[in-house]
Length: 429
Image 1 (cartoon, rainbow, N blue to C red):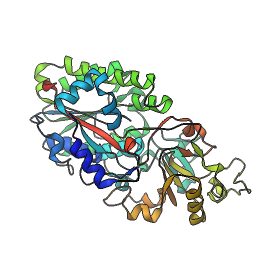
Image 2: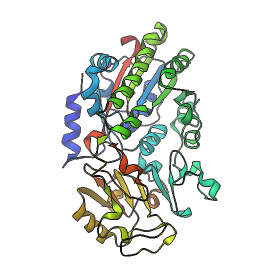
Image 3: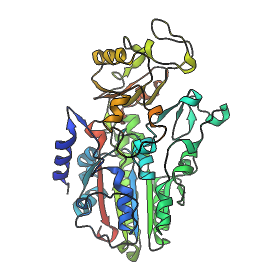
Image 4: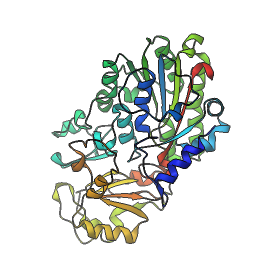
């Protein structure tokens, strides 16, 4: 069942005023790759506490981590009885809550899972990333400008290798004798980001969710005696963005992913089932917002006129600067403002928003992005102010798509911060 004692301990130690800080030093998703490595006798970092694998048979040769993007612990507790595979996994394996990292965004959290490093160490702080050297904001994982172009096609100096610091964990696992595979949708498997983040691993792609089961089974059936597999499922997260976590679309996508994993468990050869550990987890959860009440930064008094603009554009009294966009990075739940007169902007935000704000110095001093040796680009990429809304989305009308999302993530709300960790030998399911 659910490790309610772990949840209580996490909340007691880290939750204040509706905001939940990451548990970097114990029950954090950042430790999942090293936990898989430890099961396979490879030391690639600190693992999760032993409680996470209590009563789990770990004398195995293959570890499969099924990463269901955006599927939080809160949603699992709400949904599991209506989803047969989740119900069986909950009753037979149990579910331990972990926290995500900050920001609880796919760009940051997946990079942590690919490298075993905190966001402070790898330096990828959000979906939208400001590259100061090029005075350019890019969408990090697609590796595209806001206009949808490859940055290299507009003579930018940034390359995919610049997105994050540190080696992929698959290279380190390989040095310890472990073979790795990263299974993801075909549209992502060969992307600029994936080619860097998955270095050292085989990177097969699947056409759709139902096809993923056969692909995953083939990998396991042909695996050697020490093999790590990360199977990535982005479908639930996408549905949450579109329609929220309580919609029929969301439930249908969740059912499809769960059914795929259920078929994998049922159809795997008995000998392979005995030698395979299955972990189901997530990079972050989601919090539902109301797009009609999400906040446009450019409409906040005292904010727009003080934001830095691409190209150094002049602003009028309303902060409008022709075609020049404001320099805002992160996402609608993890807002990095690059601004003049930061103290004034902070006071304006305090009047207008229910949110926490951190100066760059405060965010780094408080290890908001995690402990460890900071990436060289960390200070450049962190905004002058980091804004973490409590419940709503906050972005700007020059890039309105984020304001239109229902399900969001990136902040410190417990619904987006807590993620499930369920582990069991396949033969025991």
